[in-house]
Amino acid sequence: MSRNTSTALEGRHNLRHLRAFLAVADTHSASRAGEICNVSQPAVTQAIAKTERSFGCSLFTRTPQGLFATQQGNILAHRLRRAFAFLDPALTDLSPRLRMVATSSQLEALIAVREAENFSLAARRLGLAQPTVHRAITQLEEEAARPLFERTSYGIVATRAANQLAQAARLAFAELAQAETDIAETRAEESGRIVIGAMPLSRSFVLPKAIAEFRKMRTKMALQVVEGPYAELLSGLRRGEIDFLIGALRDPAPIGDIVQRPLFSDTLVIVCGRDHPLASNKKITLGQLASYPWIVSPKDTPLRRHFDALFSEAGLSPLSIVESSSLILMREVLDTTDHLGCISALQAQAELSRGLIVALPVDLDHTARPIGLTLRKDWIPTVAQAKFLELLELLQDLPEGAAVSERRVDSR
Picture 1 (tube, rainbow, N blue to C red):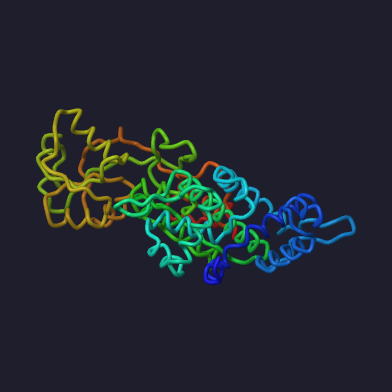
Picture 2 (cartoon, rainbow, N blue to C red):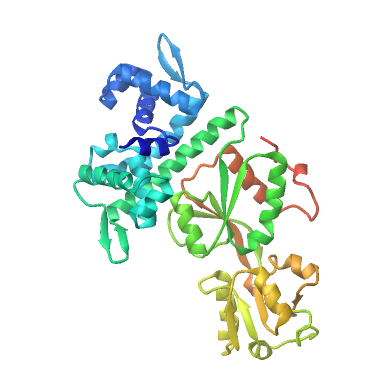
């Protein structure tokens, strides 16, 4: 691998050094670890030293009886076992030798090419020269004795084996990032980030409160809120790029490697602009509702299924539909047209309380749906991530205006 690759990816720890560290943690002996990893004892000692420098702490206590992991060493060992449990089966499926010779640089290149479907775009994403990325993929393919990408008229498409390895590598790298955050936590340092996949309701209701409360406890922790269609957010969650999702839960769960944790229930509400012809009506029929244009969420969302059922069960169909999950767009369309909107009651709470839109007297209690968290089934949060999740669970139980500090969440 070229110098440019290792420089660009030096933040990704050396996998062979990490394997040596884990062997020492398991055997308490550098010489026995060398036998397991098929390297010399001095090479193991050097790997441990470099790993300790990389993580900025001592990972072992040296005693006459052997090398014993420190608190930080145990944290790293725990995360590494999880990381290699993701990575090693995918590497072994390609070639047994890859388990010991594959590098972080090669796996980073694989992920980038798989996502960009183009060597030049992947190189640009990594900040490398295109030949460097191409060489990394070629090295993996030579070791696997098979191509990892197929060239089509649309670009370079990953084979099934490449997709499996890229997914495993993403999850393994996510565990390494978690390890860095866990170790920083032992030094009372705020490190890493929390990446939240936010569906529409959470962005206007529960998430702003949670962020405000979390900031009182962790002033420097980076928070990233990712928005998008549910399918994209779910894919990001399963790849390890998103820590958890907040929003409407699916019934049944769309795939077996996630868990859904309910927080509260929400119902739908039909809304209109302040000057809409129906705004002052005390009683409204479905026939009247069907005679107006609508703005509602896209198909295949829980909200849309309730909306469609409302009319289909009565043998009616709305005049026309604009599909959008944006509350801001809905509010502006309702303010300037005779469109009606169907939206989460909690999501619209602020607009309704300020008189920006009007709720129509239509009974939609039967549309109650669970709102909650979606997480990877085997995910273990860092301390900060666990605190954020606890905040979300506490906030939905608090009376309006109460402070989270009155409850059991503390700063660390």
